[in-house]
Image (cartoon, rainbow, N blue to C red; front, side, top):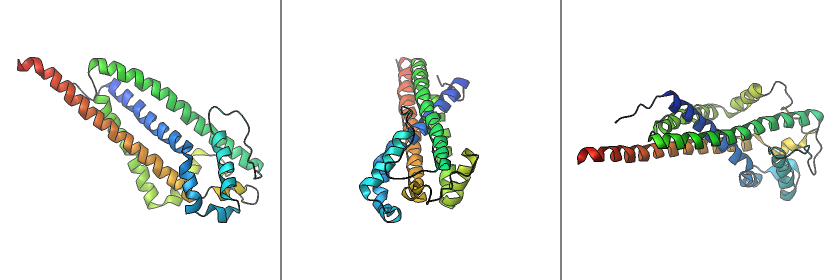
Length: 223
């Protein structure tokens, strides 16, 4: 018996999958420090910042630890000063990342419960929907990034921040010399790559489950 794919519960579960895949990708890339470490030499951050590779890593690591939902300490850089505007901006950034991390955890539990229920019903239509809606976002963002990364970067900040504190003065906030735009572009591409991978996994799981359950339902009819 062919089940309907576009049901309210399938759509809701697919949206939960989409949010989980996106937030999980952001959390993974945020904490994947080797991505930044490889950019230290590639983007010549030692030359632009005047710091050694070791000190660059220490200051970057302090920023990553600060953005964790489990960290309650104020941000302090081991070797760099920070303006009041810079402090406010990083607080706003952390607020966004904390929301992302909590959303990731919440969506995880939702998809575990939803998937268990749908498995009992032998309904995997939500995976097909999830694969489609999840791929749309990286496709659109990938096109925008490819067309003009700088415009995308500026627009992103205008959307998520209501002030211009993200425009750092290197004299007051030298941390910006450790965070070139190109690194953020690499991080964005890594996130989009993981989202695409998640979409592919969803469709692959849908294909395998649909074929297995369809075959199991047809067995009594063949006797």
